[in-house]
Length: 503
Ligand code: UN1
Image (cartoon, rainbow, N blue to C red; front, side):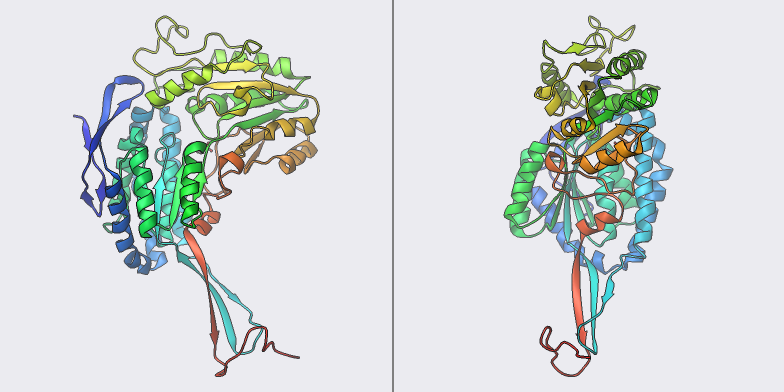
């Protein structure tokens, strides 16, 4: 039986104005869910509901909110396999990776349940006697969280768990093509004891979401927007928030470089390139874009990567594969356009490109009924090529060469994104010089560009975001604001700057 899903506001089903069909990308004829899409007014109504629930939720002591987060973690852990199976079915992420993604939610809960007993403020010395200064973290209010579907459960949890722990309420708008996974996660959150209205789930298309958000910002019901998605949409969200004097949390695309120095362990570098270039079919925001390889090891690295890719298993995501189908039809269509960026001066070192079909098979695999694409490694990429500068969001890795480390760093920064980056080297000085010179928010040494841990700051600069960070204690600054208090018990009016104590 097909799942029929609608938005849930204040614990109740909300109206829809259109319908969307979420499909299994491994068998596009198979429906995973029919999803009722809400209009802008319904999105705004969800924000009102969240606003009305917020004061009471903020009055729940933080350690008690932490206990709810602990229950969410336990429930997600107990249901990890069924949630991961659903993620695999709906977006085609290999099961092992999907299970890892679910694990990341549990890790996030583990981290933040303790934060409920901290959420520290400070005591600060005053320049006057008999006066005390304090700081408090206060919740921002309502968080509107809009997320992509490539990490349909972990990335939303990165926002929602700290937001709720800090005493905010939330409206979550997941990607339609990952609606069933989102709905299942929502159910686990609410089953853990969140009161109605504290977390609201809205399914809507992009334009209704945008219009609904604009309404909510105008009405003053949303105080923080968290957005994970493309740079183009992130820019529009940022502009809208800016008009309302808000600074959103933006987690956008990436063109993540991997530098391979002459002394690098090439097998390790190839393994990293395979995992971050082709895992999740290259559809992570942390996916490898271009390997920037020293000219002295370029031929060797390229041959080894081509061999590794040739033997990499592509197929049914329920099995043990490097990657499965692309996320959804729209991504497949866009990726096919990106393939046109391969230019005559490039060398494809991996065999056929494009969709895997009966006429264009990969070994014995014909990709029957699914959105499967050949893995592509393109050599001879130059710094002005589109394929070097822009995110392709598919199983495609470019290779470029360099002579000096300074040149490698310049090339690594050139696309203007700044999410993740990596260097494979056995020379510590090269690693530190790379860290200093790279504009990315995240740097890996002898590790791939993907695979962030749930308690380190995650986020980017430039076209990858506005410098906001998710994960770990740093995200508290997104979902709380500092409030200062001074308390004068001298019994007289002491004036700052004018009544400074003398010795
Ligand atoms: C994303 O692609 O939006 O570090 C997030 C990683 C993952 C998160 C990626 N844990 O690759």
